[in-house]
Length: 127
Image (tube, rainbow, N blue to C red; front, side):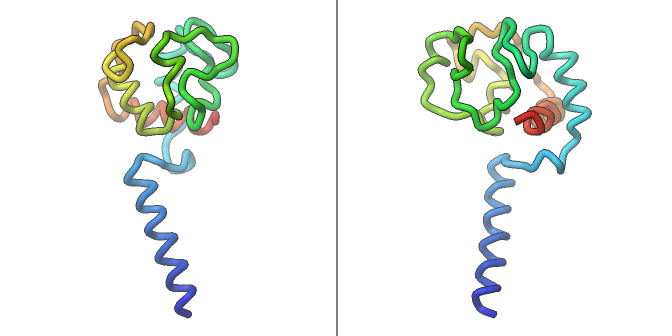
């Protein structure tokens, strides 16, 4: 019984930690709204399965920053020693040049939190 309670407590704490750090399950969000945001705000430069002006975005959540083979990144992104997670992507999508001042991405950012959450939800389903 004590082992079961410990296991349950650990599971609850782990899920609370994940939610507090922006790690959500794609099934709990509206991927269709995110797909619409992606199509209207991102697809001019990005696709899911091929690089265009910007790198391909399928699998971006959990991928090392600046690591799509064959895509030429600016120096700061190419040497970034981090991995794209929901929190990092949210910061980048809010103001790309603020997160990485040397970025070549000419997009000013998604100012609305609900748009960022939706597109991140959509991208998580494509990881």
